[in-house]
Image (cartoon, rainbow, N blue to C red; front, side, top):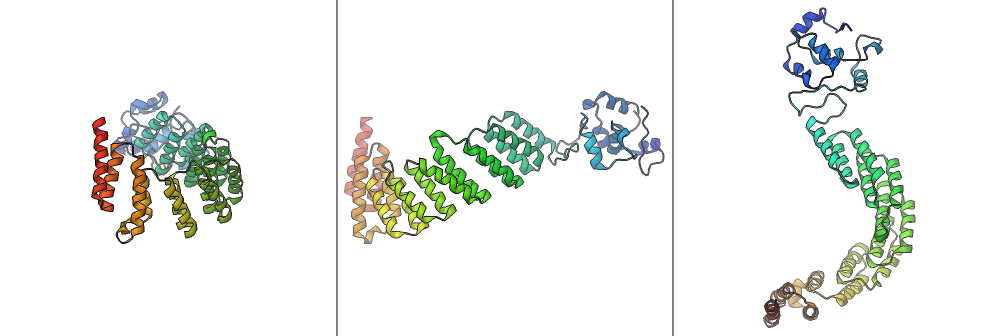
Length: 368
């Protein structure tokens, strides 16, 4: 096939080619990655250095489809992307890839492709898609998100996917479909937590109170332990603003026998600062005291009690001594004894008691 290029502003094609001396354009037609028909075009004019525009025209297999001698950029790219060719051999690999609409550099493309090959689960692919989207290639990211949607196995994987889709595409219909799949993927051993978290996300990202409420009600029928009731009550209070319903669930949580000192301390903090109920918070704190067993419990209780002011408050000293005795009775290792002794020495100022506990730590060390 005889090539008859037609470029605006060039009367004589041969003269025009002779003037093109751009080294970078010559490297674009490096022999390494060209198809045979491309090599033939290049080798037929060994004395000429073709520009990028000339090269694109010369290797366009679809010239016969054009009604006019020249195609606009968008049309040319659409046709060019159909055929399997790659204009490579660029001098700088950090230059933007001109063969697609992507704004990614060649280095980024290489890095992301390697990461895609190494990705093992939906979490890996979601993180990868997030990075691709942040780098500017939304179409590639979308394809990876779709892959995640088809392979995700856990409810939290779907929730993470929904967050990413909303952030990068703002597609709430797609997000809704992802959430619909998430409910069926809640794990049996943490079903209440998964569904509560799902309801929280639906309210946050879709503003769908009705759907969130239905899920919260499902959790209420299955919740059994302290954490399940607390998580559910927090979601209802924070998202629905239903204090009465939340209070009912908080009360159920407090009755659970597995709740420990740390559970009650966290609960007391929420009741006091979020619900603003001082009387109720004080009752919960008393339950925390009753559950105290270790030095860690002592430290957290003392912090909540504002014990740094104990020097002028005799009742607080009596309270601290009571908790310290409980911690001493339950200490099981050297570290627990040493920490308790230090606290008694520095906070209560009781050197005699601190030495007795130091002795217990030493005896335990000698036994080992």
